[in-house]
Length: 260
Image 1 (cartoon, rainbow, N blue to C red):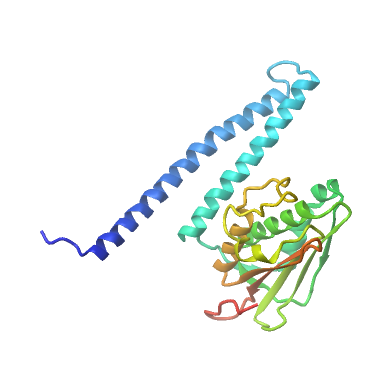
Image 2: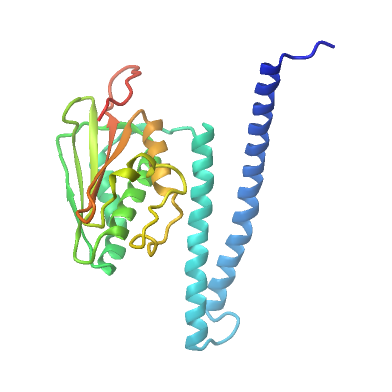
């Protein structure tokens, strides 16, 4: 039997490893989520008093456990979503989407946590914008990640401002910008801030929790929509994250994002 050339054997090996990784992630996703849901349910039952009366200390520890189960669930979901995005197994369910409505909904979801942190939320919409051709659920995920970061890194008393506008250089794209009043990011980190598991390693930012997956997920979602995401920032003066999406057009289009 004739052996395959080395290049083909290498490609076959890569394909096999990719198949094994996909199968592992599918199994791991189920194996992790199922017991986590069971733990969440059990904590809820105990907190409700189904297992007997609780004193205040017991309730406090149960609240801590419940919050950390929620954090673990978010981390697991982010990890598998990013894996799917990087593997190309994510299918976009596109429709005509009003970006102003999506932003309003995302900001409403963060109104309470922002208020608890002493942060104001502001939206500057452009009501004349055309709709975009996008997967609504995925774009909301990208927005949530950007707004969450903006709230988390803003100083108390600051304002997070989200704007929607026509792109200044190409009218085939809509631009969304999320500006915070936070600590800012040094230029040397710009090239890798969107890489997975990246967090700025300074004494000022180590106190902020996070998996380092949110911006990587955001970047891949926007690029999957043939858009682009980028950052403007200055230390101690805050950051602004921008992304652009193509406007919904009649007929097929292969346009991809222009340079910012």
